[in-house]
Length: 576
Image 1 (cartoon, rainbow, N blue to C red):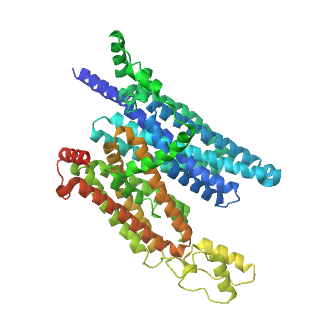
Image 2: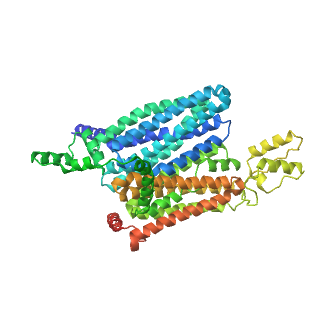
Image 3: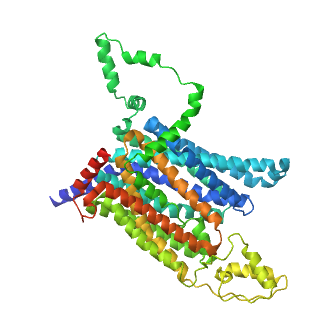
């Protein structure tokens, strides 16, 4: 009897595991993990490839970043509109193929350029090589636009349909997707970095191209399996999309049933004559259609009940308080090594995962809208450490320094004037390695070397402590706004609204890069920190206004009934 119970228990566990592994939810996770891994490897490697190609200059990387941001800003709404107007499976498969094929082609071109760079440089006075640079950036930008379409389709639409009417399940799936993002954001660059370190850029290009080729085939199969396991994905607001995808599942549409009944009754189909009498749009109207779509998309975004919440999330992109190239570059000037930075990035990933766990717990106890408020308070509280870091010893803040004054020139001029190295000031606040490099180049001209004063680490330590701790509130807030958009935007507008949301995010991200260009010196980084914190506060103030309009008098009620809050939000949204 006991043995039979043990067998039943084992069979039940194995059966439940098998059911989970073959479920649409798990297959969606697996496909997203493969897609994100390839994306992270490519985004990490392409910047290094462009730097390597252009003689260790950041020019091509800067141009690539500007083109990518500008393209999504302009075309985000049009991409979203395309997602809305076409069948789900067609959109997912098309964007998947375009993205991966673009990366493969770009990788092959990069390999050819690396192998034959000298020959290309001598052909037509270097114009062939310049054309290759333009081609690489163009194809890489197409891959990024396709990746944007994939993200809108899977993370903003498919996941909602797979979760069904269960908001708790939707929250768990959103959190799991973000955890996958956090892990791949750390592990994928590490993997491709090791390949490029112990191999070569050519091997790195070949590996990424091969990975995308294999991944594309696997992801294509996984998308089809998810589509088969979730018949609701075949139902979409667009009638044309409904009929196309329902035929793939061999399911009759309501219109087909109605037409069969009418033909049996001997009636004429009035819609048939309506479609015959419709005139095709002229050339001028077709050319103006993207502009009309762009305008209507932004107007529709502004009229959404979650507009303030989306704007609040976008304002969080206008910040230098993240682990991008700007913050890591500043960390190098403050004496942090690459190994220390890698540890800090891993710590930020861990706190990001903690934020996804906090989101699910808070949502269950306090409701979705209130979770955003708590997350915002947590993020702002942690960023206070970043504000303090600007004014403590070791901070290079010095607004008297001209933003475009070359540091090396100032240092050499101070040597030529026989001035002692100041005990406090901008020059003593750079890394020991940079300082010794400058001293070495100066000593070859006959000047006396002087040992630099160590940089106090209290300022940079407080800065990164605040940045890492704030990731908990940041990712919980990001998940909150993401689910608000999923729940409150109607199905027929999910693509276009989320496309505009991506455009807003890129717009504020572009503004933050422009801000750094205007104040590139480490002495001005403290000012950038203060501006960044101000934008974060403004973003959360917008969300607070949204929460106030949504919850009204129950805004500060502790731990309410989640179901009641959800019903109240739905009622408020319908009224708006």
